[in-house]
Structure formats: structure tokens, C-alpha cells
Image 1: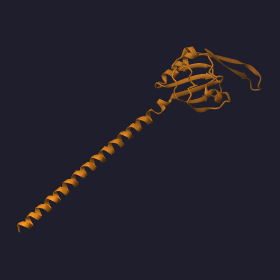
Image 2: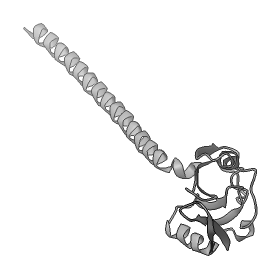
Image 3: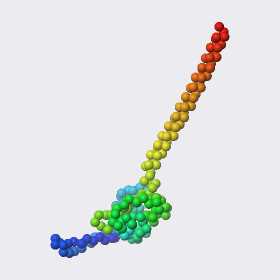
Image 4: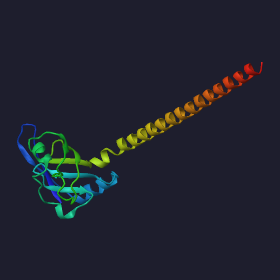
Length: 178
């Protein structure tokens, strides 16, 4: 559970009180799970000092711990939103495999919270790779079709030359018979 508080003032600006709300981390984990991200994607809620509050896929050992090595820490600590291409995987110390990732880090308006959505290079290039394979297949099919067409053209020309030679030979025989 983490807590958010808000000061309330009256119309003259005098202090009226503080409202404190406790929010369960499980609420956000369940919400992030319902987003239905593909393998290789993650959603994380952190405080501005990069303390992990909730994450999907869940990694309970890291909840409540800080990750100041994250490239998003430098962006969120100065209050800016960012899109980060991370080729060192510093952003995910939980992952044993090093993989290039792309993250979108956004400050939650009027709160000390940060949302970080990240995906692996494999996931963000998946559709591009499918299109590339399709284009590669079409290119290969086109080359094979052209090669087959040239082979057929070569056979037709070869047969035509053979028929021409046969016709000339028959003409010579006919001329010599006359």
C-alpha cells in the first residue's frame, strides 16, 4: 500500500486539513494485467524517485525498491515526459536477459507518480519483420518468375533458330532437286 495526500485550503487560503488516501499496489497490478500486453511488454508505476510501486508482469521482489540506474530516472526527476530507446537494458534490472527496449515514461498529472510502459525491440519490430518477410518472399517469387520467363524465352528462341536452320536445309534440298 502507498499513500497519496492532498492539502485543502478554504477560500482565503487558510489550511482546512489534509486528505490521505491509501492505495493498494494490487489494484494497479490487476489493472495493468487487464491491459493484456504481449510477451516482452511491461507497465510499471513508480514514484518520482523511481521506487517501484506496481508492475505487470509482476515481480514482487522489486516492489518497494528503487531503480535509480534507469534511464527514465533522469527524465522523471526533472519532471519531463520521455520516450527512451534503451540499448543497455538498464531499465529492466529484473530481466536476466539483456534486450533492447523502448520505453515511454509519463508523469501522472498532479501526483508524484510516474507510469513507464516498455516493450522489447523484438516486439516493436514484429510487424515490421512480418512485412519484411512478405516483401522478401514477393521479391524472391518475382525473381524466380523472371528467371523462368527468361528460360522459356531462351527455349522458344532456340527452337525458332532450329526450325529456321531446318527450313533453310529443306530449301537447299528443294533447290538442288529442281
